[in-house]
Length: 486
Ligand code: LFR
Image (tube, rainbow, N blue to C red):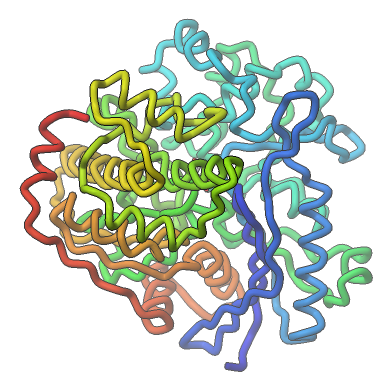
């Protein structure tokens, strides 16, 4: 395919990639140029991000893009996970290596914070789900460094700064902090003041699709790229993925998405945030999307459970690939034991299989004692949680959800796709796998003048990628399991 090339730098908690999106005006094709691992950097017992290594990997990807596409490269933009931030000094350098959101310094902070300021007030000001790693609690956990900071950038903004010097904060990721107002659409400075947190380091917030600047001279020299614009896509990976859901029903809430990867983000798209008592009671979040839309969703623990089980199996000398684990899970007895995947004990336990076993023991269930049983327990529990969240979303919006789109890396998991259809009783449409990079690329393509509405972006996705359908099978045991409340 020939056409204009937009580069998506797509960083996830487990891996990063630089992807080229070639857009011919009607369809888009993706080509992965460079993939690299990501993960926590341990410094004196704390979990950080190795942003310098990530930066050099991004450089490698950009050099590969220059070598492969030369002058056809039209722009570049970065998306990453949410909530994490870099504090910059006056001279533009990080004041310390940025923390990983799973770092344990936030243990207990959210509980203390919500004793000081009631949850209802925090929700009214931000519309965000209570998660212990939200930026708000991270700032409270390390407030002593804030005085040194001139700027707070979120992770993608930081890489944009290194690419073009911009210090803007992009809207979709700003909404994950739990100090951004969904109705005022500015920083919730009054809330920060109630916590005696400073606000001087908060900069301008820009919408997805803003041209942030042009590639710095030194980056051009090192990579061989030209004087191209750096464009803020939807910088929150989930927002980018939702923008690339291949629905033909933009503007309606009768479809749900699951952006499936390390996390499962289960939600609907709305024209504005929903701050209702039901949304608050359901601990839902309102995160910003493309074109001012809001993503009403819930973070479900996701395939992190399986990733950590696999890691633990490896440590015990049992190195089974992902497909092998799924086959073992498929062969295991369904719904034998179940966990609440969102119990905070699963956020970062030292040994995931042991934690799952302990949960099952504590709740009087059979302990999953093989790899297949453990993984099956994770997948059944996720599917059951999806069912619950879909129910809550319907209650909150008052609209029946007729179909579920699963996008992202987790949409490759056929077993989980089928279990999701069975558990929710809804048809599941799986794909595209690379929704995040696609959403990133298509927002850039729109800036280049090739596309107009969000519906237009999604039409391109539909015309470029096939989806796989999973129909629900009649399985009364899911209703029973849901009734049992676990
Ligand atoms: C998914 C994600 C989620 C966010 C979590 C932590 O990759 O961005 O949306 O809650 O990571 O930042």
